[in-house]
Every structure is written in C-alpha cells, then in structure tokens.
Image 1 (cartoon, rainbow, N blue to C red):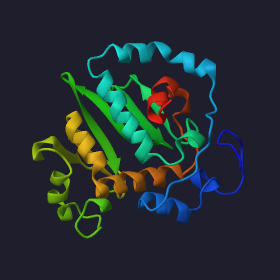
Image 2 (cartoon, helix red, strand yellow; image 1 turned 90 degrees about the vertical axis):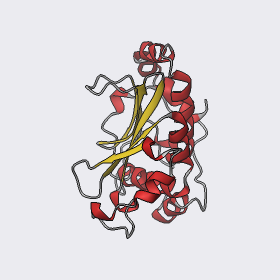
Image 3 (cartoon, one colour; image 1 turned 60 degrees about the horizontal axis):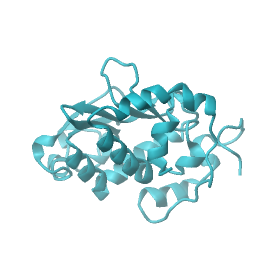
Length: 222
C-alpha cells in the first residue's frame, strides 16, 4: 500500500487507500477501516509548533479541547494515521482573526473548529446542508430544526449559518456537553463523516504546513 506522503498517479485522496464501498460502510457505521500501525512524521515539524501546544495547555479549556478532539479523531476521520497531515491536519492556536484554539482541515476546507467560550468551549462544524434538511434537499427552508435541536443538550446551544458554496452548512454548538452530544448523535456523526470524506477525497491537504503533531497525538490516542 502506498504511503500518504508519496507522489502517486491514479485515484486521488482516500480512494488510493480504501474504495468507495469501504468508505460508505465506514460512514454508515457498518464497518471499520484498517489504518496504519505507525505514523509518518517530521520531528522538525513537531518542534515547530511545540511552543503553541504548551500555550494551549495553559488555557483553562485545554482538557476539554483535547478530550473532544480525541472523540473527533477516533470517530470522524477515516484512517487518520495513514492520512495524517497529507489529507487532514489540525492547527494549534492558528493566527486567524476568529482566534480559534484548534482547527481541523482537509483539502482547502475547514472541517471542525474549537473556540474558547469563557472557561468553556464552543465549536463550529462544517457539513453538507442536505444532511440537515427534512428531504435531503438544498433548500434552507427545509432545514430540520427539530433534528438540530435534538442533537444537543439544550436548544439554545445550537445555531447555524450558510457559508458560500453548494451544499455547505455550518453548525455552531456551545458548551462541551452539547458538543459531545452532537458527536454522539448517529445522524449528526454520519453527516460529519460524509462531509469529511468528500473533502479528504479531493486530494492533498492545503494546510500541511500548520499541522500540530502534538495536538494530533491526542486525536490519535498516542
């Protein structure tokens, strides 16, 4: 099997490692995927963001952030060891105007972001709109509000926005308890997985340079 960091011809993205039927089964929770036993990493790159990771550990939200990321890495990213950095990445305290604590990306797309919310956290999930409408359409007026509110601890913990692009939907979830509930909802989890598969299949991750191996350790259980 080819490694993620090598140049290849033929299928792009995850299709180099697992076929579409295997991806569908994983998305539906019907089967697991066989991942690499070891990670391929650069020590130089790890040390590049070590100071940021130490700064994150000093934040009051650090334990919640790392625990939630562990759930996300285990449940929402297919073959994460085999595809780390090259097909998905996580940034630690990225220097963007919205001041996130961590952000997970694939291809050119943000997947998941955690922010400080007082001493608690809030999150932003980017998913497909069609997974959150009553009829799988792209019509905002068909949004399944009852489903959205049922995915979190309290209805006021969830809100949404519509980024640019076809079939793109943003979900904001406030509070660690509601973020965990959202990740545990079978329908929401399937939606997260489908969106992540879409963008991991598009080719190489554009955010390789900002990957934090120290944060990824917690996502991969190392």
